[in-house]
Amino acid sequence: MWCNQIFSLINEGTVQNIIVCDNYEVANQIARIQYGEDSIALDTTQYPLSVGCKYIAGVFYENDGTTIISRNQTADEEVEQINKQVEALNIALAEMMGV
Image (cartoon, rainbow, N blue to C red; front, side):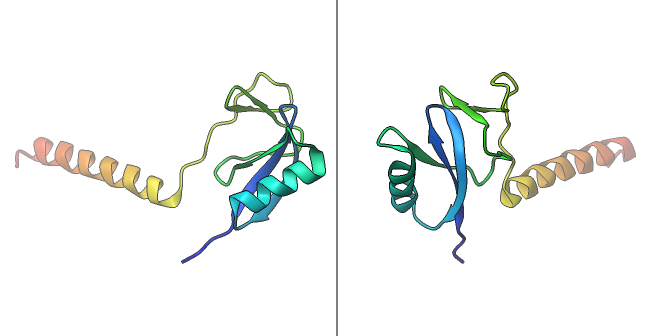
């Protein structure tokens, strides 16, 4: 299965625009054409961003530049985490029941 990615077009540490694209190089070219040669496109599919958010030293921040924006888990990551929790709960339940 193929999915498009969400790219943030970043110039001078600020998200200028957010686009859907299936190719990093194309997204990067769009960023440079629209906002200048120092602009970049980053895959932000897992980040809840909006135009105006900040990108400082590899970390995304809200528009205020101080509140960190955390990466959302993928569905596969969530399932893995839930499976680990279920396994731990099953072990605890078995211990409580003396099994």
